[in-house]
Length: 443
Image 1 (tube, helix red, strand yellow):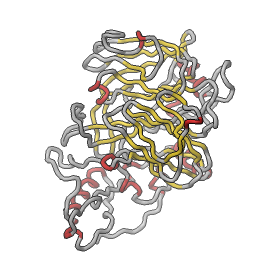
Image 2: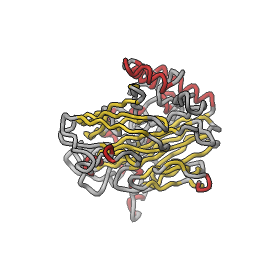
Image 3: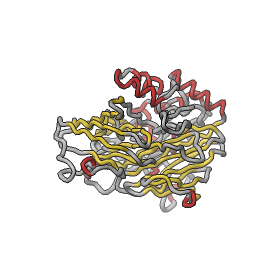
Image 4: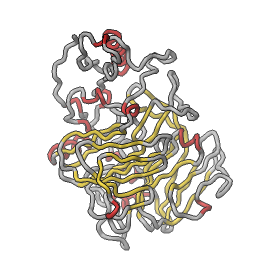
């Protein structure tokens, strides 16, 4: 995965896009995903206080060029191979080599031109979800435009007067389920108050991938893989914030299920929806927010409680990863019912992804005699080494064992640790390998 600094260098090397990229990133050397001082330049006619750039962990931002006053973006709809956990890769559809597609960030009042090239084997269109734009640009097949054939191109162009959290997606039901979606952020001319120090985006998606297959079954009504920004935990990249900072998290859902997203250790206000910023009188305190299909929710809070806090969908089946294809074509149970066989099963997976298998949490000697056993026993699978990255620095040994499905971490860090991780990230160093390793023994 490229570092944020490498991404910026790539953006700045795009010739005609150099000027636009310099305006996008301002004076900062970090990329658009940086957690340090990183803002989008508002321009001469906008408020001098520039808003903080949104970081969508595990998903890049889309650069643009500037042509006759319009910001020009280029999207390519194409097949994408996406590793969602160390032992599972899926073949989906996305934009510009990623699923979900790259995040687009603009300013309220911008004129944008978005060139869409279709490299899919079938026709497609693009819908700009919630945008108040001319009907000719709305992306409705046969109603507002002809479908874009394979190898074809369509140019969308419009002015943006709104601000808030929006998204783009193909307007074909099965194509949506194959992954054709991306986040679209419209920053306000006048920054929201109170100002935030960190701003994150998360796209919720669901997948039905049968044993031995890598292609989602888009006609299925039940799902065995659930992802944040295209990856499942523990492969999700944690959100890092400074202790005491104000944080915004934007959550977009384009799937078949509603998702109650729960934040540990903090109370937040719901400050926005897919319709834009809510008046402060309508803000509501919560620690769980229901994000319905085709909806967006913005939450804001002060990160005043230090620690590594889970952020996850609270539907029980969405807090786990499918293990039904460990033996490829042979369907097996999520976890075996007997200790020694379960250990052997987990050892097989550990060998496949080149990590050390850690013994599961203790069980009672007579566990198998108790009706209902096992439930969560035997489901743990630590894989710290396989998901090592700077953002995981300092996490406890075997932290990844119970991180599964639609789940990530919000790491509220003291300034020294926060800065150290940024330094490690820029230097391309490893992360969780630095954590101390306690002894463990198999019973």
